[in-house]
Image (cartoon, rainbow, N blue to C red; front, side):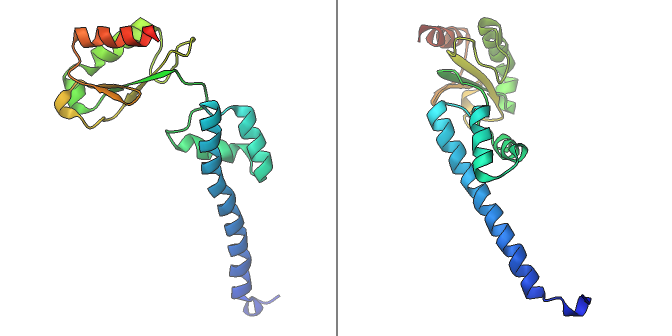
Length: 161
């Protein structure tokens, strides 16, 4: 076939069909991840494997998409998710001490969950409450101006549940 005989519209049409099919599959991924995490609390590997087969996508691609978004997790999460702000204002006002105390008390590091699933510890870049630095959140509750008493209360509240 000569290059001049190539029907550009046909080629674009075929490529468009392929892209649309792949885009549809990828579009389904996000909704699937959300539903799976809603049901399980995280994205179990065997369930992602089933999803990849169902969508005829490579498992590596499914993991690639899921791992791109911080909202998706690949292991069970704690009942309480404690996030310590490490932004500039919090850092300057002692966030590292808060993080260190929580790590020492619960024996977990940033991104880890306690074996009893009571707590997941995370750091974040900014909570948006710089005037209350240092700040941490426990699930949706914001704790600001963390001092020794507030830190002890936070630890106690995680242990109680």
